[in-house]
Length: 150
Image (cartoon, rainbow, N blue to C red; front, side, top):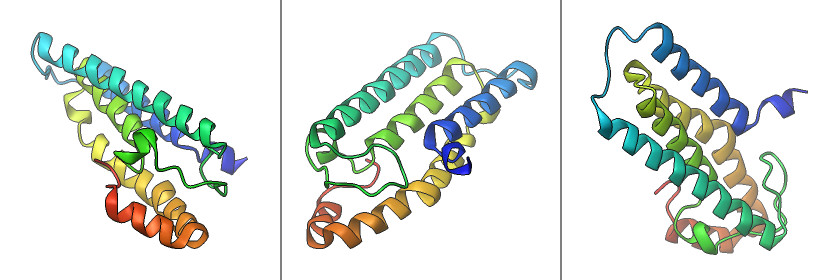
């Protein structure tokens, strides 16, 4: 049961609920200003969703798992993975930041780096360890050429 709860979408959902609650019940009259935050928030959410779709498509094409904590069948380095080693987690972070901006959840901004840290510790580092063991030189070359986040 715990392995199904300890998934990135669950963590994202938790952080989104915290941001929404802050905006709704503890705004303290703070906001990001008029239209720019809504526009930027929408662009970030849309960009995050696009990254998720591109990454899922590329992983499906490579016939490997998208589920964290599972052993990958192949090292995916093409498509969006040629730009970032973690497009799904980057997309999740963009969605969180975008909705924080859209909801005017000013005090929730620190949730973004906290979310990214948790994702890195809980998912990215263990995934990279598994990839290093399985794909050795190929992963080393990929990690040297492609950044973890951006």
